[in-house]
Image (cartoon, rainbow, N blue to C red):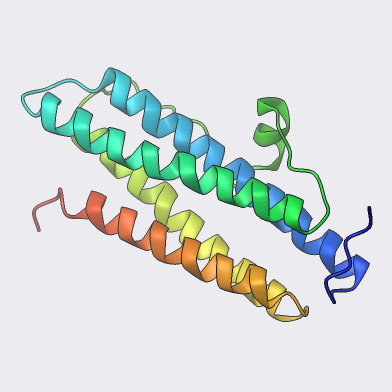
Amino acid sequence: MKTSIGIKDADLKKVAKLLNVLLADEHIIYMKTRNAHWNVEGADFHAAHLFLESQYDELAEVIDEVAERIRTLGHYAVGSFDKYLKLTRLTESTSEKTDSQSYYKELLTDHESIAMSIRADIAVVEGTADNGTEDFLVGLLEKHEKMAWMLRAHFIK
């Protein structure tokens, strides 16, 4: 059944496409966080392991929310890693280091990158009548900013 929520079809398509790119980004950072959780080593292993688990749990919820927002707009969420890797604005991990600080630096960079991308996405969505997605993106922006802060807090000035 056609989605009829007061937003032009072209705008729904544009926003769904933008959200699928964000969904790809969320999947990549989720897997990078899971990888760090599984493979972190060092004297702070236990604390890092638990911290990273809290981060990937939050990202799992974000992934579901983004996919459901796409479906709310009447479009389909991308659901394969092949497509995620083609759509993402992030890169896969290239570091061989397994200490928490190395993982945290890379994840921090990715959260900051996603935050900047979401700001640009909000500007695009502002040009449509999709206030729901605009509000949704502001909420996601706040989550990534907080997750970045939590990572940043592990570094001494």
